Amino acid sequence: MVDLKGKHKVISILLPAKNEEAYLEECIRSIREQTYAHWELLVIDDNSSDLTWSVANQYSQLDARIRCFKNEGAGVIEALRTGYKHCTGSLITRMDADDLKTPDNLEALLAASGVGIVAVGQVQYFREGGIGEGYARYAKWLNGFADQNNHYDMIYKECVIPSPCWMVYKTDLDKLESFEPNLYPEDYDLCFRFYKAGLIPRATRGIVHLWRDHDARSTRTSDLYRDNRFLDLKLYYFLKLDHNPKQPLLLWGAGRKGKYLANHFREHGVNFRWVTSNPNKIGHLIYDVSLEDSTSLSFDDVAQIVVAVGQPLGQEEIKESLSVYKGQVFWFC
Image 1: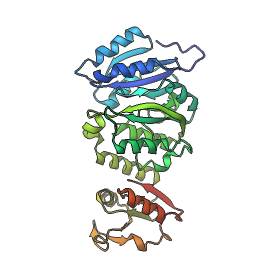
Image 2 (image 1 turned 60 degrees about the vertical axis):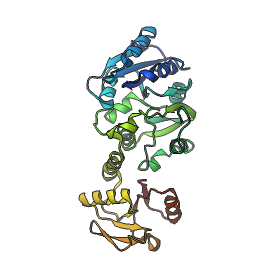
Image 3 (image 1 turned 90 degrees about the vertical axis):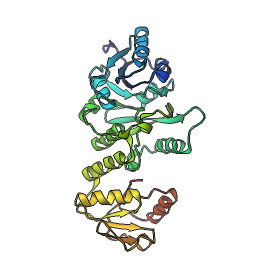
Image 4 (image 1 turned 180 degrees about the vertical axis):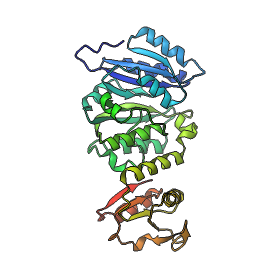
């Protein structure tokens, strides 16, 4: 058990692991090599069928700061709950069993932490044989918020806080229900709850987390992380936190995402105008809404805009069109 009576703040690291025998040892070694020594690692075995439990227990025998638990349920949310109730630190962070921490990870996150703050680490993807362009672009996009700490400006586009690289005070995490909600993707849901609670993002000054990409990652293989799950979560929080039914709403884009959003707006009784730049759709009725020409759009009576255009070129054109717009824009793409 970690001694909390000392003068140093203890950091609890939650590490769910399911069939991570191939990567877990390297992951734990990166934690043991931290320049900040006052941590506890809680490894939660999520019903693994390989040697994950054995690897974790070997390290718990070597280092008293490491404790191992069997998931009391099934899945990453239940694993996080199992570990969280055994935490003794005043600060909480997460780790993925296939990733690596740079040696200064905990020190850098702690330096960025504070009450009412969510410390956010800059990240770098890696993969045997090299990473794809999409992952490199996502990491660059995430790290781009570091200078202004304006992560929430684009929260409806993607998860703006990397799931295995944040740190908060336990008292703040308790106030936003820690890991109690059952919503997936769980990392994105937690990000929205940071936003809802008003926790201020503060980024590290450099890369402190190495994010591994491989074919067996749960985000690649599990239905819990399919595209519609992300859209459903965005819709849920938009309608709960940001949509103002007293103001005009405009939906921009009539592709797959645009149609999905439009259908759900209709189901929830949300009135909206719908615009597109596709000449084949202008003037057509979809879900009983007539699509308008985006090139002849006037912003005089528009207060909120939801953008659902997936193509990067189309997004750039929209940004240019909105350069003088003073209302709220939510990027769902």
